[in-house]
Amino acid sequence: MKRFILTISQFGALLLTAFGGFYSRIAPPEDSLKFWPGYASLVAGVAFILIANVKDRVRSVILWVSIIPAIACPAVYYVKYQSLTAAYGESRIICGTVSTAKGADYASKNPGETREELIRDFAGQTAEIWTEDSINRARVALGLSYSAAVASLAFAVLTGLQNAKPPKGT
Image (cartoon, rainbow, N blue to C red; front, side, top):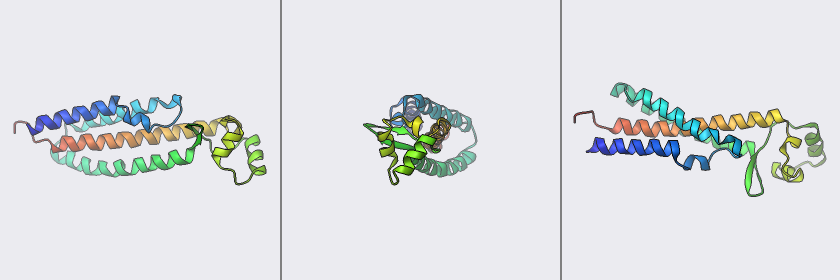
């Protein structure tokens, strides 16, 4: 009975990981980044399938090792999210890291302005403040760190549930 309940729990966790809305609420902002939640779920699912058939001892080691990225990756994502996004209106938008000539000139004439104030002064046109390449690099950095965070959390949960199952036939 315990094995059945844990299998149902795993299936439910996998469904929530793959199709649930939780991860999309913490995803990087902007519509073009909606790719990352599905990608993170896919990575976690594939990794889980690969370890589901290994020996119990190896699975236990994988579980304990997976806890480290499950703790570290969300923290890294949160730091990146805070440093690469800014509030604008009711949402957050992705900022670049390298200023355009116009953005650098404006920032030098207005020292001490926050990113939010710069974006507001440029009416949300981030490409006028930061180079398009630096904005794209920020998008990719956010997406990859998000995927690592979600995949590592899902992988640790699924591995923990698999590890808690009694062996078949008991």
